[in-house]
Image 1 (cartoon, rainbow, N blue to C red):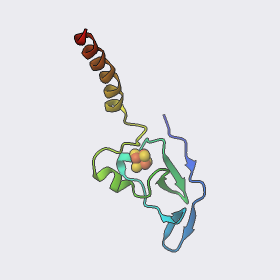
Image 2 (tube, helix red, strand yellow; image 1 turned 90 degrees about the vertical axis):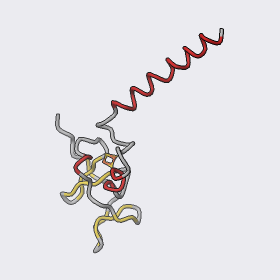
Image 3 (spheres, rainbow, N blue to C red; image 1 turned 45 degrees about the horizontal axis):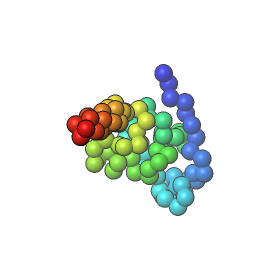
Image 4 (spheres, rainbow, N blue to C red; image 1 turned 180 degrees about the horizontal axis):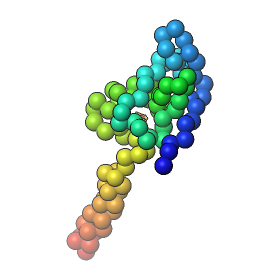
Amino acid sequence: MSTANKTLEGAVKTNDGVQLSGVILQNIVEQCNGCDRVRTFEEQEFCASYPTPAKKWSQGRCNFATHIKAEASVKVKVNPLKASKRAAKGR
Ligand code: SF4
């Protein structure tokens, strides 16, 4: 599976680097590979959601990553179960 190279819309090249809506963007980090929010511009890769992907990952897993969602989907399944157990006990 190859990630389609989507272009970063609205980005402009400035002397300080690639800018989007007045914010200088930093390149994606290794962990971003495969994420659906990766965009290419001027043969560089950026994140469509965060100007500083490295910062996003420095605090742990990026919560917007589309390629890593195992943990999130488990949580969604566990919660309704707990809720129904609790409801059954109350009766
Ligand atoms: S959403 Fe997160 S994982 Fe995806 S490209 Fe942006 S920083 Fe990287």
